[in-house]
Amino acid sequence: MAKLEILHYPDNRLRKKALDVTIFDENTKIIANNMLETMYQEKGIGLAAIQVGIQKKIIVIDVSEERDKPIILINPEILDKKDPIVFEEGCLSVPGFYEKVDRYNFIKYKYKNLEGEEVTDTAEGLFAVCIQHEMDHLKGKLFVDYLSSIKRDRITKKIMKAQSDGITPSRKDIPYSI
Ligand code: QAP
Ligand code: CO
Image 1: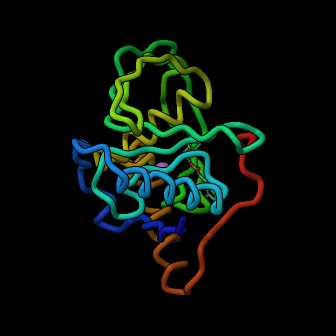
Image 2: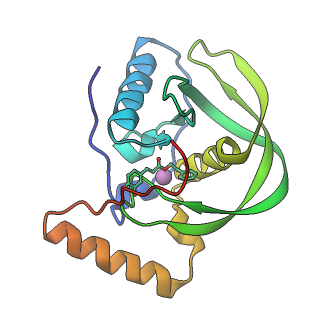
């Protein structure tokens, strides 16, 4: 397995739209496993292929405390959503910044697994929010897009300054439990 390089906002490649996975082969498995390794090493709870420069609809998630329940979602679609909530989110592509975003606490969704089989399931709480966040990445959307332009501009400035200083902003007190 290999750790992949994560693109940081405002990199244009984060704005690309992911393409459907049509071939479920060894290469797809290698990408998913490398994404999991990258997510675990960076202490994330979710990662989309777009964030590592791969334009495919592949998402990895693990919201378990023990960090031992990896989930791989390919070509995901949300079928139903209910119970609006406001959730404070971060993103491995926007390191060091956390802001409140409007989401749904409950979703019904479908996806394909690594074998190409279709699965339908439900999710709630942090897991549901994480799926919504990662699915936004597949459309080239980031959580900062939900913020006021004042807040977003402030984040853009700070993150570009940090990048020019060669620093990756980070925060140790991550608000969700991992
Ligand atoms: C998306 O985000 C998410 O700033 C996944 O310094 C986040 O894994 C969905 C991370 C919250 C729902 C709720 C961020 C790690 C990880 C940072 C992440 C950082 C180190 C973010
Ligand atoms: Co993200």
